[in-house]
Image 1 (spheres, one colour):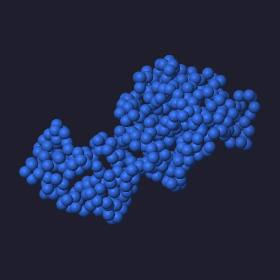
Image 2 (spheres, one colour):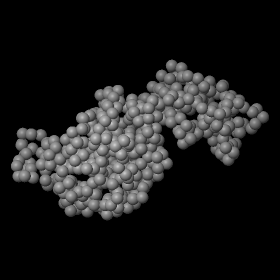
Image 3 (cartoon, one colour):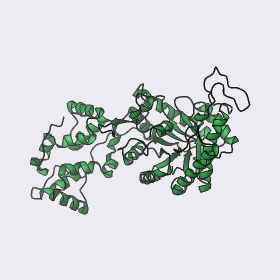
Image 4 (spheres, helix red, strand yellow):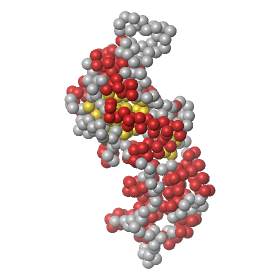
Length: 479
């Protein structure tokens, strides 16, 4: 499915996982090429919340290496490896010769592999490239026979179900990528495979062409994969299912997507030991709303909402997100505020700026601020560089807050309920819960807007009046 994105726009375990080890779960995303405005940090935070260890991403040219470097760095901080899929972006399979294609692919692999050889030890080379070579009606097979004109495109099961002249170009790209990565370091693992479905014949053609690979890649969208995994296992390499999801994602039903993903994960676990299934990546993290009405707009675990300025904001985790997280990590406990201080406590004789800084730390992070950090915030409050409302919102964006509660992984209604407990110390009333959730699902408010609305409410301002400058804000009702 990366192919369409390229038109429109890890360092993984280096040793073979034992049969008794769990599958390395991961997810696909397009942080380099899609959804501007969605920070890679938050994308990786979602992976960590899901319990995943690998982010499969596409890269098409060496000019985006700096973006990949940021991904690797941020991933390391969260214990997440990056699995780049090299999809050469400057090649033309129709017009360029096999020699030209090989040279370009080889150069790209050497460039990227050399830069990241200490950080990325597994690369996926190409994505569903065999689709280009599937034999069509009336074309000649390699054995000289004609593929029947009355049939549709071949299923790709046998090695003769690929058109020789087109396959030669696909093979040139894959061999160039493989040889290039081997030239950088023979120990780098090279993952190569197909789009799934029936396309096992491409593996035999790769073997015949002398293409070297260390991991056999398969994609899976609803069909039982055992027959294909059995065939792939004959090549002696471990198997990574680098794309899988419920067919059509959530286009037909969000609950159907959740159930389909759960069943697929259970099936992969059942087949893991017999066929050396090392890793599996859900396709994909975020909906690609811009592909609507195509099903490709609904493949994500999380909604993606369009902004009026042409950008994007992250929406609500879908039922599929919850199902995947529960499969990997178990049921999520409901987050509740945890504090070793009392935000309502105030020292009337203490300067307002000190009271406000202490209050914000206690309310949001559940602790007292350290001396140096408090000093900086107090100075900022006294100089009017910030105010207590902005300070609270800033602390809610912090890594510490995210680590403490991981509330970004909650559904909209659960998140609103959590904010009521955090900021008002009570359950959300139905009116406030329904109103905020409706605005969030419609994209007319962000989660930070909800927090701001509660903070500016008369209830909040009255509850914490002793620690707030109540004359400096406009009070709004929490609902």
